[in-house]
Image 1 (cartoon, rainbow, N blue to C red):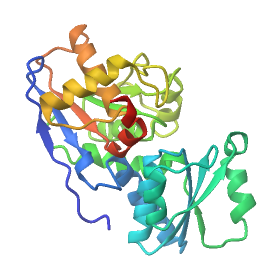
Image 2: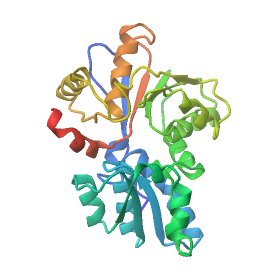
Image 3: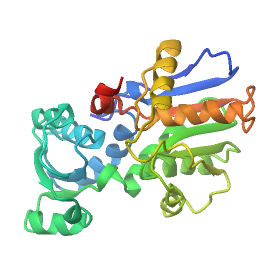
Length: 289
């Protein structure tokens, strides 16, 4: 399942930038999209090596990770179960999960905080059960995401990515460090008070010399938005033909534009933005467009 990869680098033609490129991770797969493909690649390999055939994971009701895990499991002949944070709901994302054969366990928010306890309570005696953390956070996921940098044929002054757990960012930083690049990695946390992301990255990659964290582009917090962000999405997509989502990639691209306006980065600098996919998240905010 993870043998074929299509993730080209494309140049965006925008008046404000001479050298803005995007790595189209969103084109890898419609359901195992972008960084989710990268994260699951070695997670599934480890599950297979341990002879586990039941993937157990966690996420919110609009989680791209849940859809990706469900799709990956079905294509690999595996079972999958997800603990879904919050009250029982029905939406487009969870419909896809069910169609891919995933069982859903809706979990009240307080219990959801202790994921290992949930796993132990429900699957302690299931010898085939394999724990996958929320968002796929793991050493295996970092290894998969580091290959994004390994694939690059050009060198960039700056690489930008959005961050929820920091796993993708850790992988990108690992790729930069191991390839001895001088590239600066700009990480855009999509949550309020996103400084914790650095500590999460350091768990995997202690060398943060090339890391720059921008914590002012969360637009209110995780899955929070503003009219300004929605206007940016509509203008950006109309001008580039590139779809972006309100939760992750829109906030990252907004940061790129704002930092260029503020002269933090120069218009002539060679910039690579990582499009991490997750476009199904648009459905969670369809009424706002």
